[in-house]
Image 1 (cartoon, rainbow, N blue to C red):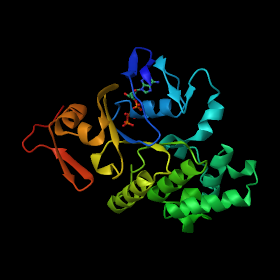
Image 2 (tube, rainbow, N blue to C red):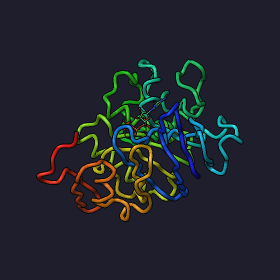
Image 3 (tube, rainbow, N blue to C red):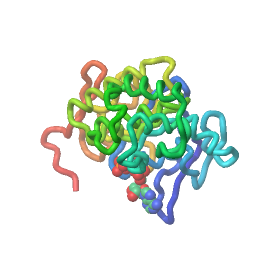
Image 4 (cartoon, protein in one colour):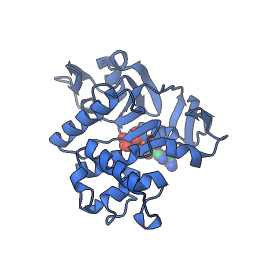
Length: 261
Ligand SMILES: Nc1ncnc2c1ncn2[C@@H]1O[C@H](COP(=O)(O)OP(=O)(O)OP(=O)(O)O)[C@@H](O)[C@H]1O
């Protein structure tokens, strides 16, 4: 992205962003509510055109390419997508239908090979036993894993995950972080961008971070350089203490700091 802004009326959702993601990188986009994270991810998923600036994805310039050809090369898991899945859709079909860029099994008869791959992906995410259940009967954590399996179904070159751990309990979060870490460390895995509000959700193996506040970039670059107390405090507009334990990060407000408005 070069000089990218997205505006709606007088509101700037993201402003003047320069950002490069290489295919072997795993990025976390971190920022408070309303910072513009989802907007940035939708730009990266060819779901949104910038108001200003240039976006190129997988060698194709947005505005000069057919986004319908580009989108299957990008795997996306988001709450918006989750909300469009029919409750009675079979879990394996939620995954396999990604290869046909549809939601809802009724449209296609799927190939056995594809169904096998979908089950394999569900297995890699620890939910193969749910393959024949209706999506609507799954817990939040099981749904998130199903959606990640779906995002991987087309063997994408870029994987975009919008708050994959939101709504999970502690065990569910830790399990998902471990699985995403495995994926991040796999050299054959696609480039990854993960949006989150919480440093605790950064999976080991992620290499880069972009910190966003009020639509602007506070800092971006190698994770270790960018994730500092100063940068995090600026991003969340309060004095934060950041600790690192092994490959994981933890943050909390500094002792004695006054609550923000
Ligand atoms: N169509 C629109 N018109 C005006 N403002 C909008 C529009 N769409 C989004 N916004 C605003 O743009 C800002 C950025 O939204 P975005 O969803 O990208 O933030 P986010 O960082 O993903 O937030 P969250 O963490 O709460 O999901 C928000 O303040 C939102 O209210």
